[in-house]
Every structure is written in C-alpha cells, then in structure tokens.
Length: 127
Image (cartoon, rainbow, N blue to C red; front, side, top):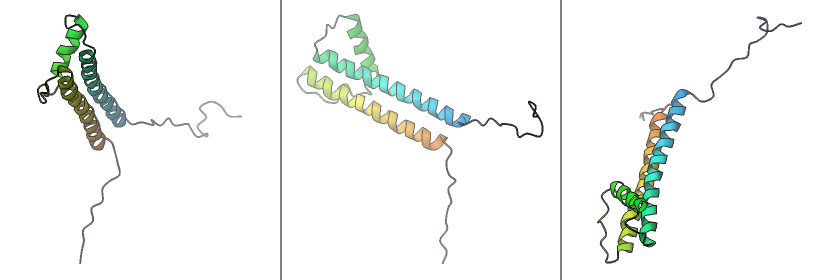
C-alpha cells in the first residue's frame, strides 16, 4: 500500500515549459506587431476614405485623417501627382508598407537578441 506523499515514491516535478525570458520576448513582439499593424491599418483606412470620397466634415474621417498624418513617417508629400487619390495611395500606401516592414524587422531583432539559442563556437584556423 502506498500513501500520498510517500518518500519512497518518486515525486512528480513540475517543469515550466516556457521560461520567463521567452514569454517576455513573445509579449514584446506581439505588442510591436500590434502597434505597427494598427498604424498600417489606419493608413489603409485613410486611403479607402479618400478613394470613397468620404465627407471631410465627418468626425470619423477627421480622426483618421489626423491620425494618418501622425503615422505617415514624413511621407505625406513624397509623391506629388495631380490627383489627390493617387497622391494618397502612393504616400500613405508606402508608409503603411514601411510600418509592416519595420514591425517585422524589429520583432526579428528582438527575437534574435532576446531568445536563448545555441552557444556560438568560434574556430581559429591554424597552420
């Protein structure tokens, strides 16, 4: 007969599967991806509102226009074609694409720096 917590029986050990460092890296990467994706989404919504000729006096359209100005990465007047729709598509579209690229690069750097990995072995060539 065995009893609960019998010292002769092997005890079950609880092992944490994801160390704290890995969880922190995942959370930070998720936040970076979310912020960059929201900024890109705002720019895409602004493009859609301009193409749909939304009422500029509407509160939502004004909010999106102001927010897109803030996240346009200074590319608002990079391309200056005659049409406002084409100008918005090129400038805000490029800014949205850059936000997605920046998010991917930053999360990759955070992962490379923050995640544990195999130790590097440096070899020295000898003659």
